[in-house]
Image 1 (tube, rainbow, N blue to C red):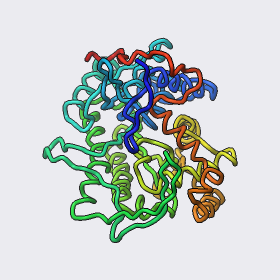
Image 2 (cartoon, one colour):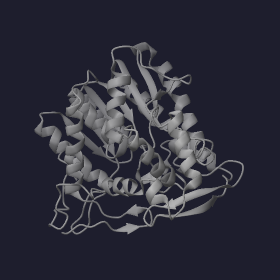
Image 3 (cartoon, one colour):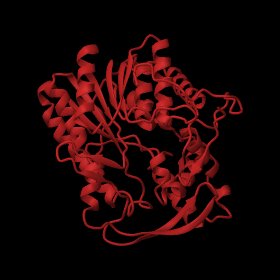
Image 4 (tube, rainbow, N blue to C red):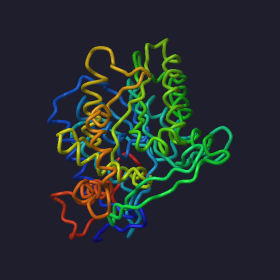
Length: 397
């Protein structure tokens, strides 16, 4: 079938398998170009199919030669209908890993559930014995609690008052003002239940109880802080409460791993275009201005560049992992440079529908958005028939 991007609001309903394959090849080539990393050799990535989780799997495999198990929740294809982008990413990753002689298997299902945790435990026992790195990179709007059965839904809302600021429709380039109503009863608790650290701790507890964590094993979860521009709706809003919980959980996990000399970290990463961030008011405008500044200053990174730097310059230097005063790894350091943020703040005040294409990088934002779904890659013939029925080699549907 001929596969074209089909949009509904801030969601693309189609994905391109050949574009996803090209994306994976590009990421692998970047990692290879940076040289080998003396990192973990047996890696579990929870949330492995897109974004920072996918970049972590690529970096582990092709930077450190690691065996990887990836857990994700993606929609496989059916005839005449494409899979979700993460399915195609994972299929392409496994194909490249296997061609390179690397172990790579995947599990598709709800990572919050006891069943998927047990399936993962069984696979590690059978194939790897133990893992020495666990990446936790889940991004889901809902979580059914495995103990209570309650379905929790996260919301992105300010706390204590209405938040009003600029935003942009990245499809049209229209800059407008938007107001977001404050959190109501239960919003904070539900958001923390979905996006906080409870499930991360459950994973680590389950792996440790099964003796699947190697001596000195590390686990890393991903977070974001962002600038003062967005803090009312992000870091000081409901999502921020969840991130606070996630970061506090890192210390609890570290305490629980003392007997194996293990360690848990939260890595604060850079603002990037993701399916989730595209739906957050204010964030697309901020990112388009940020991209403009960081590209001009030679500081721009995508997910693969961020994770390569996290591994090579933070986690696996051979010395202590550098952290901030709250124990967090700061790989958002280039984004949060004072001069970068000052320039973004100045442009923010100036931004209008008429001048955004000039003072911001809306094209870069759009390109990255379409890339998420496998569109817009050089070397892919999008006018040609594509086989939508791609399989993930290790998954028997």
